[in-house]
Length: 441
Image 1 (spheres, rainbow, N blue to C red):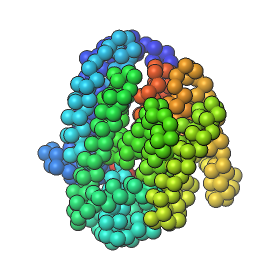
Image 2 (image 1 turned 90 degrees about the vertical axis):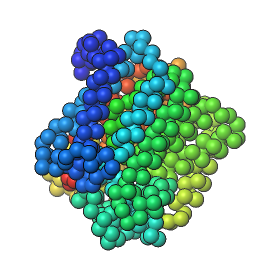
Image 3 (image 1 turned 30 degrees about the vertical axis):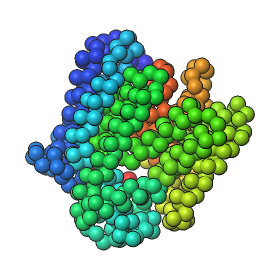
Image 4 (image 1 turned 45 degrees about the vertical axis):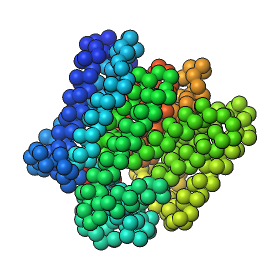
């Protein structure tokens, strides 16, 4: 792989115009899949711009090939732009952000591609907006067919595994959409796109290298495909994560620590996996013996989390506990699980063993990544990146949009070898796990 990368890095792909063209074609193919909904790679609904072209509903292979070719071209285009940047290309980051905003504006009006998560979000929002508890009642049991119908068959009976802040966002969209699930999903897509561009603007204004940061986020065709085209809440997690990182690096004193802790708590209110950012920020602080600062941030974060989760109580934890037992390829733990099955090991016992081993493996891999990045880089950024990337590599259940939190942290780390591997891992997972949400888990 390293040999291939070296050859490509000095090929025509590293020319800015070629790289941008390849990226654009990759995005266009993904958008065409959303525009020709419904099909096996999208939700079985149509958003406003998906009415303009005929459906690919009876062309399963065509839809899959178009999407997967788009994924690969987006990865190659991203690599080409980063290589061009490393060889002296300095595009105007503000112009890149504007172009990205135009693409996002179109994409949020197309049917979500790659999973049925947005349909689940809408259903949980519908339940909450009508006074129900999405942590106790699944979409199918709620009985609103318009909302349960678009959800992938594997997830119709799934309780919400998202935090209370996510439920508030979902309920807000559902309160606008009312009985129309498509409108609710469209509102969720728009909110997601606004946050994505908002993060890009924040990075443009606060990053030491705004060109690199923009290429890694707002102009990153791989992320646009996974986060915007799929409409995933991980965009909100990444937004809170980068805000907490930037505040921790730039705002000192008691109020800076309180704000950092609050932002970490809010991120955990969207998805509990955001706790990795808090741990990553605490890592260098503890190594520098900044005990009081670490304690303040942790205490504030815990208070915010407790307040958020207290609304629904312990019912929030049951779906999370059940979801923590999920194991699927490309996670290496799937092979461990298969070996256990072959040996006749009880499924619950196997889940417990994996549940103990994978966090240990994550810490080991995070340490190795941490050591591979030059010691002169800011540790408040390197540690969260190392931990989140390690989580993506070794967690039992991982999806391509989970990488958003690692990408947003990497925007603040100067050039390093991990960039290529994060891009490859993101696209590799996308090729395995993008399927419109209709297949078995």
